[in-house]
Image 1 (cartoon, rainbow, N blue to C red):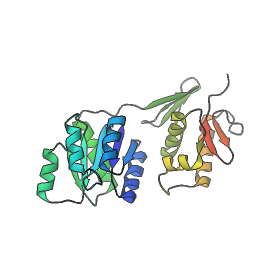
Image 2: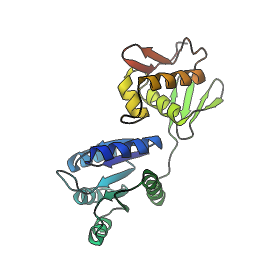
Image 3: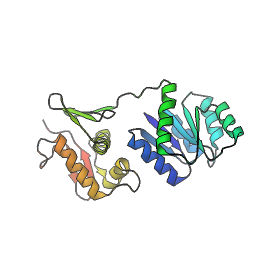
Image 4: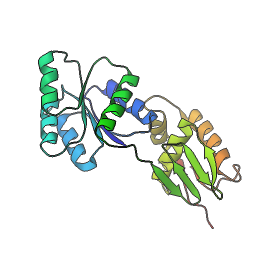
Length: 226
């Protein structure tokens, strides 16, 4: 499921993105109303988490313009607690309204609830490279004649990111940001995570065929030679 987060507070935006990626959502981020509309048109997210007090174009206008074209579920996220603002947001097409401050668990629960009401099921996210097939939602890896291995949440996020970008070397910083979020990990933690994942997917972890390491640059997922 793809979520578009629209929030001009950079610290809060990073927290929301980290929370949702931890729950296996694909997240795009915009910091103003113009960027929000552009990302909505380009990416067609399954749901939008929309702040109201935005630069360039405010959240009410963003909501109204989207509603004129599409029924993408929208959750408004704001410090405005006046009843008139809440009613206005709902009348203009918002599906839910969350007041700041809020808990990450509350946000996730409200997103899931809105998606259920909208009839947008959480479709399996399945990726394949060579003999590896990952069901990211179930955190299950299938290989070697249907052998199934369970992955931890971190292993799942790492392998999914490598599979999406198969054949490319990703920098340490890009991988850390995707797996742990802003300021949530470091190279030593990444090295340990790669080591654990290799034990699960490689026939010989000391001579890996899938996860390639380029010293000083990063890691990539390659298709083994026949």
